[in-house]
Amino acid sequence: QVQLHESGPGLVKPSETLSLTCTVSGGSISSAGYYWSWIRQHPGKGLEWIGYIYYSGSTYYNPSLKSRVSISLDTSKQQFSLKLSSVTAADTAVYYCARDNRLQSQNGFDVWGQGTTVTVSS
Amino acid sequence: SYEVTQPLSVSVALGQTATITCGGDNIGTKNVHWYQQKPGQAPVLVIYGDKNRPSGIPERFSGSNSGNTATLTISGAQTGDEADYYCQVWHSIPGWVFGGGTKLTVL
Image 1 (tube, rainbow over the protein chains, first blue to last red):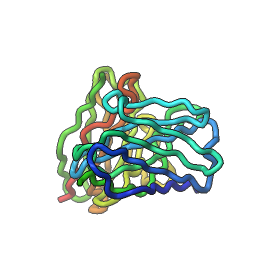
Image 2: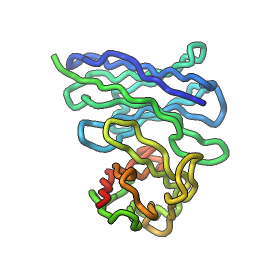
Image 3: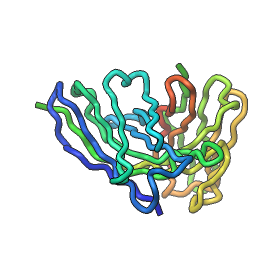
C-alpha cells in the first residue's frame, strides 16, 4: 500500500528556510485524483493545513502562510517538497505529509507520513 | 474564511456511546472527514464524506452531518478509542480547515 515518509533537518535557525521532503512509495505520485498535502501541528495543539500540490504542478496554499510557502514536485523521485521561508519560533512543529484522496469525490487524507519534528532555534 | 468548532473534551463510560460534534455555518452542505490521533502518532482517517468508514475502521465508528453540525459517534467505546479527534472540511478560503480537536476520555 502507499506509504509516505518525511525527511529533512530537525533544527532550523530563525530567519532561514525550512525545507522538507516527502517520499511516496507503493504508488505513483502522478496518479490522477490524488493531491499531496503538508500539515503541521504545533506542540500540544491542533492540526494546521499548509498547502497541497497536484501532479500537474498546481498548488493551493493556506492564505495565512501563503507569502512564505512553496510546495514543489519531483515525479521522477516520487517526492514532493515544502519550503517555508523566514521561519521563527512559531514555526516549531511536527510536520506531516499526507495524501488527499479525491477519486470521484472527497475521501479525506487517507495516507499520512509519520511526521517529522522541526525546531526553530539559534 | 471558515471555521469549525469542536468541544475541547468529551468523556464516555466504557461501553457507552460517545458523541463528538463539529459545528460550522451550513456544514451540512460540505463533506466532513474525521481523524483519530493518539499521542505521538500521525492522525488516522476514521470517517470520510460525512459517514463512510475506510477499510479497517471498526463499525462502532459512524458519522452524520446536517444543518450546522456534523457528528462523530463511537458506539460501545473502548479504552483503545481514547484519543484526540479532529473534523475537517474544505472551504474555498482558506482551503482545508481542521477543527480544534476533541480529547476523548473513556472512563
